[in-house]
Structure formats: structure tokens, C-alpha cells
Length: 138
Ligand code: ATP
Ligand code: MG
Image (cartoon, rainbow, N blue to C red; front, side, top):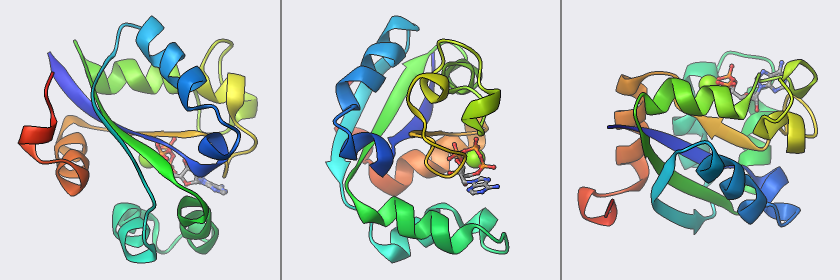
């Protein structure tokens, strides 16, 4: 078993799609082993997406991620990171495969409904930004 970190982004929470996204996650065999709804501060969003701070879309990304509440989650499965990336679909929803979360729900490349970690190492870092070990109950 391994873990990945997920965020249901503001474009999805705003449209009341938390349950719909979770249904796709669970149908794919990922277990939601921790979950909470939070409103990110600007500092939290900037830190979370720090690798992108030189990119032209960084300001817009931080603004979007702080506009409405998000749902942060820890997901567990065999090979959780690549499994969830496959369930999410491509960053740009126009390129996402049928049945993926982004194909089903995303509005645009910026408002693409979910985040998922891109490596086991980053998953551990991201999980620790939002959850204590005691909050991950399996
Ligand atoms: P995430 O990290 O959110 O899971 P990702 O790994 O598929 O998404 P990244 O390249 O890490 O994609 O980009 C992080 C986020 O920045 C994207 O999910 C999207 O919200 C936003 N983003 C990426 N590229 C663009 C772009 N060209 N224009 C606007 N927003 C973008
Ligand atoms: Mg990414």
C-alpha cells in the first residue's frame, strides 16, 4: 500500500462536486483514508505550488486555489501516485481520457478540479503540510 495527496479544487467544491469526485476516486479502488474541507491562505497556496512560482500562471493559480474552500485528502492504494494520476486525467481537460475526473468535471487547464501528487516523495511532503499521522486513520 502507498499513499498520495489529493485536493478537490475550488472549481469543483463551488459546483457541489465533492461527492461526485469522491465516487470516481473510490470506484477506481483508491481509499480515502483522511479528508477535510479547508480554506487555503495565500501563503499556504504559494508554498504548496512553490515549484511553479516563476510560471506566468502562478498568480492566477494562487488566486483560484484560495477563492473557495478545497477538500484535502490522503488516498491509499497499491501504487497510489500513478493510479490517482491516471484517474485524474491530463492537466488540460481537452486532452484528458474519457472517464477521468478532469474529462468529466474540469472547466479549463487552470480550473481542473483536482490536484494529485506527482511522486511518492512529494506525496509525503504534501500530506505532512495538511495532516498529522494521527489524522490518517486508514
Ligand atoms: P496538479 O499539480 O494541480 O495536480 P498537474 O500536476 O497536472 O496538476 P502542473 O504542471 O503541476 O499540473 O500544474 C499545476 C496546476 O497549475 C495545474 O493543475 C493547473 O491548475 C495550473 N496550470 C498548469 N498549467 C497551466 C497553464 N498553462 N495555464 C493555467 N494554469 C495552469
Ligand atoms: Mg503537479
